Figure 1 (cartoon, rainbow, N blue to C red):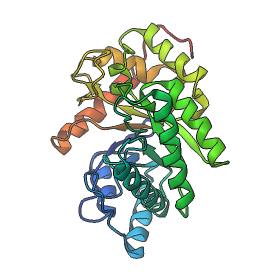
Figure 2 (cartoon, rainbow, N blue to C red):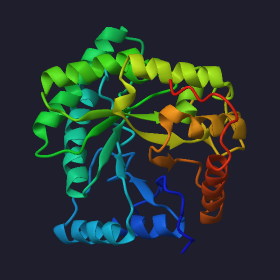
Figure 3 (cartoon, rainbow, N blue to C red):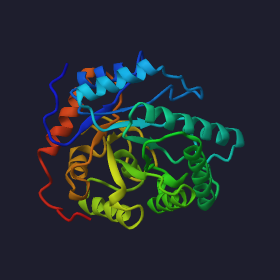
Figure 4 (cartoon, rainbow, N blue to C red):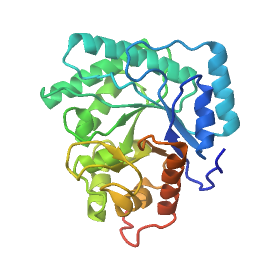
Length: 299
């Protein structure tokens, strides 16, 4: 088991649930995590495995004993809330409702959802389509944790534009009054969308765009990933901390910007080994200990 992170900010990895759910807790502790993100089933298949009550209880007990918080459950890759394909749209609603119920049964604090791709349809159509799917799933699910909509690198759906995400949040509030909906921001996705995090003026613009649309008060979680691609590439290929095009400077800016400070951090860096994960975690800790020299404007 790795030495636990002592930094007050919660930090963790997206780890595998292969075997049993509780194995994810073991894997998180092996990496020195204090937070955790998982899928709740096969992310590349439509069928969601049912979980026995004893497995769920074992997982919740293990997570509590390990003091891993928050727990975020990430949506299956196949879910596309704004798909124009009727069959995919219907299956997305069904899988989303089932995942929301399972995430709640696991004791998840958040459910992270990519808002989907409308594949060239009008943006307003995509936003309305996504709202219909998510609202239908929320209505069908017996219980659900707060949903965190994640930004995307390309504007092929609501996630690529914070104004569209804000419109989606408003529509969900109208369709399902009281629905808990927030925001998760990924550094690699923001970089791919054109926010060059190496420039503090661009980080300020990112936070201003979030604040005037979705609202910084809805931001609950940060995904910390370097990128294989250039800013504005519209691509979201994650890379190891400090080894990609965002680099140490950009990620130091991102991690230490006051408006983003204190939020839980989840790394989704490429899987190679536990040792590489450990190096990525330590790289984040070093960047957190070396804040930028300027740019203290919180917005």
